Amino acid sequence: MSELEVFAWAKINLSLDILGPMPGGYHRMKMVMQSTGLRDRLRIRLNSTGEFSARSNFGFLPTDSRNDALRAARLFLERIGRPELGVELELEKHIPVGAGLGGGSADAAAVLRGLNELCRAGLGRAELEKLGGELGSDVPFCVAGGTQLAGGRGDELTELPPLPDCGIVICKPGFSIRTPYLFSRVDGRRSRLHPDTAGMVEAIGGGDLAGVARRCHNVFEDVLPRNCGEVRTIKSRLLDLGALGAVMSGTGSAVFGIFEDMDAAGAAAAELGREYRDCFAVPPVPKHL
Ligand code: C5P
Image 1 (cartoon, rainbow, N blue to C red):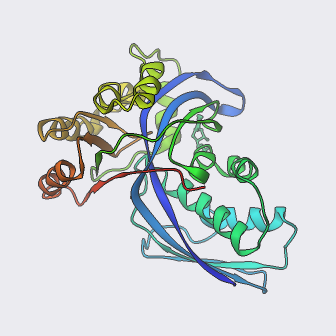
Image 2: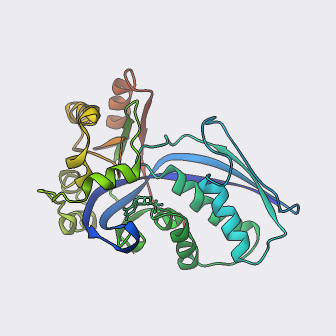
């Protein structure tokens, strides 16, 4: 076997808190992360030429060493001691970029999982997560996904029980937000409100969807620049359309709402989709490793 198709699932942050600065310019996080049914499809082809290349339906995506999925492929083959091998990647992207949905991280994690299988390298979940941590802070979560509590840089993971059945509407305004920019706006500011992470974890454990939705909170919303007002507009729209809770994901700009079931989510997405091209109704996805 020299070719494999894998999926890369977008993440949302059910809650996101920043506890303080960390060495290396990072921030200490506390987040409840969830995989969703919004996914990219990747075709991975191994070759023996040692060459790396990528193609994507998102024409603006870099296909050189700045591409997270390609970086993952190089790192993986280097670490398992197969530098003579190369990889050709075909990325069928559906996860919007610059949205706080971890699209690049999900692609990188999918490449790690895929190459582990293709090369029969036999790396365990913890080893793949560690490799993922070298590629980006959200990559370790994306290795197994599901529902997890993330601490540290985002790479200290504790598995949680799966989120109760529900429907999730993800909607991205026309603009994107750069992650380092929003982190820089947090520095020197004190968030007034923090998410109730312990309550969120308890609600998940008790299968209490309303309790989860009520506790959705993201401290980055406090530092959004003025020209990002549409994030608030989309939140209100989602709540008006029946969401039990709505919040921005990660560093945005995508917003998601939690609905009772997929029917309710589908109806809301159909309505919101008239105004926003990037609008999706998807289920939560359980862990995939
Ligand atoms: O780890 P990753 O490459 O995804 O991070 C991108 C940038 O986001 C970092 O360079 C840093 O500016 C910021 N970041 C942070 N604290 C984190 C994760 C990311 O400050 N826990």
